[in-house]
Amino acid sequence: MPPRTLVLFDIDATLLNTQDAGVVAYEMASVKVFGVAFSFVNVPLHGRLDSENYADAVRRHGLGIDHVEHADAFQSAYAIALEKVAEDRGGFEACPGIVSLLECLTDLPEIQIGLLTGNWEKTGRFKIQAAGIDGTIFRCNAFAEHGEHRDELVPVARHQFKSMHGAVPDRIIVIGDTPRDVQCAKAGQAEAVAVATGVFDAEALRATGADLVVENLSPTEGLLEFLRR
Ligand SMILES: [Mg+2]
Image: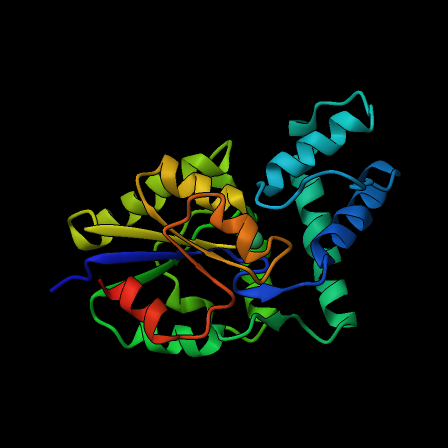
């Protein structure tokens, strides 16, 4: 029997905590490519795609260039910068409970896990590896390259599941730490679990209309019961 539920994990502040290493790496990459350090003060980055953050920063800094033309150079510089930051910090930290939850889920035949993230693929996979998490367990994935906006990503993962198993899953559950994770779940006819391990507390996340809100992703009975329902 193929799995019937696809559980999609956001990366930052859901699987792992980079302590804003992404922002530091954006700044380093922009100095390298454009000679200007991108500032993200008061910019609501959480839950957006890397590609949105990059294009928006190019516009905000009035560089007067076509961001698409320089996207590859920026992405390469960003990847190098992120590796440097991770090395300086001795890697990134998995969020509380996540290692145990992933162990539980990979043992369940009815569940397939994947990634739904605003990260570009290469650097998203790097973050996971730098947090000591086995990236090969995520098999139906949607990254920043797969859409213009996060709301376009659930259908990408659904399509991958169908290619792999021959039918769409009965349920798709998006797990993330921001209102944008919940919103993209709803846009994609999926369910949403919101986790308060990022900048949004449980009360703020409940206001998003998430189907379940948890303080962290420890594999409690309540969380497992919801995922296996
Ligand atoms: Mg996140």
